[in-house]
Length: 73
Image (tube, rainbow, N blue to C red; front, side, top):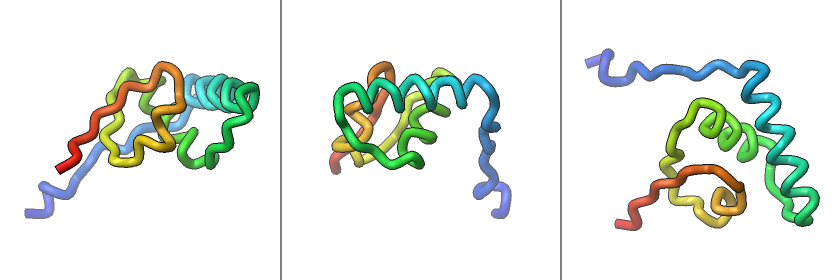
C-alpha cells in the first residue's frame, strides 16, 4: 500500500532556473503578477516537457509554452 504513495520528485537544476527567469521576465513585461511558487511549478513542467494537471487555470494559463490539462468535473 505504501508504494501507491511513492512519487518521483523532479530536481531543480539550471534548466528549470533559466525557465523560471524567462517566465518571470515575460510576466513582468506584461505587468502580470504571479507568485514565485506558481512560476517554479510552471518552469519545472516546461523544462521537463510535462503537462501540468491543475484546476487553477486563472494563474497558469498566463504562462506561454505551458501545457495544461484540467478536468472540471
